[in-house]
Length: 230
Image (cartoon, rainbow, N blue to C red; front, side):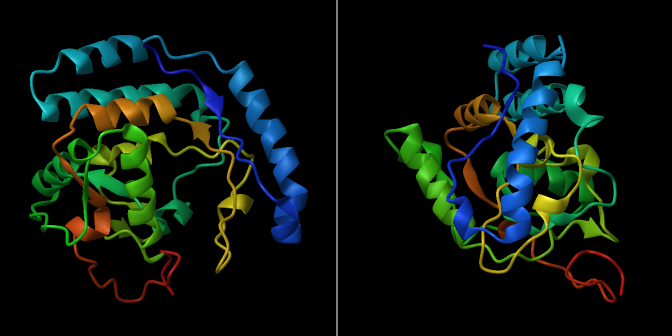
C-alpha cells in the first residue's frame, strides 16, 4: 500500500477558537487542499515501504519507513510553511519509539533513559486502543523545548524521528503553529495516518514515549522558550 497524499481537516468548534484562528482556518484548509491536489507523489515511496515490509528486524523496518516518510513529504516541502529556523513544532509532544531513541543515542553519544511512562502496541488488542493511549501520553507532556533543539534548529536532523519527518504544515506561514496557552490550535498538517500506522505495526514490542522521556532536558543557557537566544 502506497500512502495517499491528503491533508488533515479536523472537526472543530470554530467559535471557541481565537479570532485570528477562526479567520485563518477556512483559508488554510483551502490552501492545503489545493497543494495536495497539485502535488505529484514521489515514486520512490512505494519501493521504500516494500523494503520496510521485508525488513528482518524492527530496526530495519523503522529505518526504511523513516526514509519513506522523508520521500513522502518531499513533493510538498517547497509549498509548506515549514522552514529551517522555525521551531514551533519542537515545543509540542514528540512520540518516538525505543528503536528511534537508540538510533538517536548512537548518533549523539547519549544513552537513552528508561521512560517512566510508555506504551507498547502489543499490549492492546486494537490499534485504536493503542492510539488512544498514545494520545493520553502526549497530553501529559509539558510544552518544553525538545532536548535536541539548538538555537532554533534541530541538532539531530539526519536521524530525526518519524513524527518529525511526517509533520508538515500546508498553510503558507506559521500563524497556526504559534501556541496559545490553554488551547489546542488546529494546523492543516499533511495527513500521514497510513505511514504512522505502518510505523507502529513495524515494531509492536517496542516502547513508545515522548522524546523528553528518553533524553533528559539539557540546560541551554541564554535560550528562550521559543528556542531563540535571548
